[in-house]
Length: 307
Image 1 (cartoon, rainbow, N blue to C red):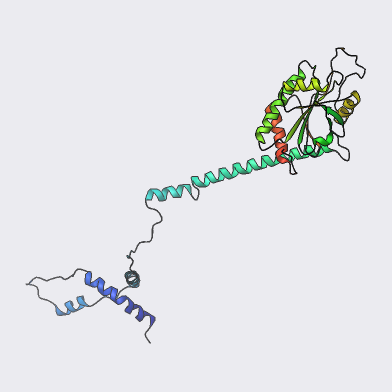
Image 2 (image 1 turned 90 degrees about the vertical axis):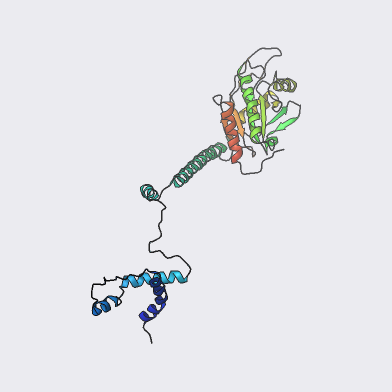
């Protein structure tokens, strides 16, 4: 049985023969005056024993020729130019694509954590304002709207409600706040264009002078979507009590008597379940107040009437 080394030589032999055939002849001709030395000539023609490195090179060359691939003794270069290799060595494993991806990921995480922090803060405010058992703000009431129809707290269910207390003879504060209310209504509609998700309500603290007809004409100057409410002095007192609103209208006002009404100046935001969410004061701009309302609407997980 032939040894593995002999098999390797037989495998390499065709390649070696072709290499020798292609090599130029190397013969040295002596001058005619020089006497040849037969022994020296025989020794010079005797084949040299190939070194292990030469054999390995020949084996690789023969294998490459049989597989139809060009043979090269140099290893595959990872870079096209020396400058590219130096540049790669300077920047290491990072690139501008990796840096951009890192920045985008960081910005996304920062935005997400800020959004979650603000959402959880709004949820804590809404939960704290609900109270335990009896609500802190809001409750049962019975009033008459500016169309002469009875209106109770049950009519507020299903939508967010923005409640404001005032009176039509107010010289400056109420008109300013109702202008802001009109802006909030438009901003909320623009943000939630697929339906009417909020009911704006104006409740009069001056039932002796603010009849349904007076309120209807008064609110038409600000926004047609505001729903006006009035009632008897006791009914107004009851609704102000459940909303924790202070007002100073005397119960025995004479017809034609001129007076001013002192009252709390807040917008009360109620959720679709009739629970108090947040109070919006005079320090809020239209844009800031609209954002508060839209954020709470976006956080709402229950059913929302958009009709």
